[in-house]
Image 1 (cartoon, helix red, strand yellow):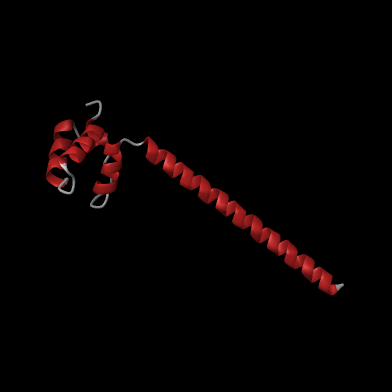
Image 2 (cartoon, rainbow, N blue to C red):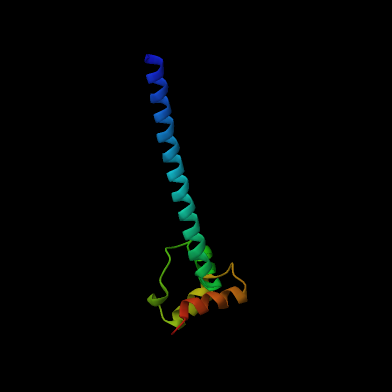
Length: 97
């Protein structure tokens, strides 16, 4: 009987590990889907801003500067961006201003 009990214990342990792995897989899938959904909703200017500007400093919210200041910053520090990309970033940063 001792062998049967050990087998049952191993089976229960295996089932618990399997459930944990499945739970983790579901969470990871949900996180990936959420990230993709958020990225898909971003404008091209916001994606460019997040991808390029965050490598040098924290992301500064568009509301923190006026349009003239953003234009200066993008011209001064957006050296890795072409003119179309700079314009897209400026549209994102100055929308509604």
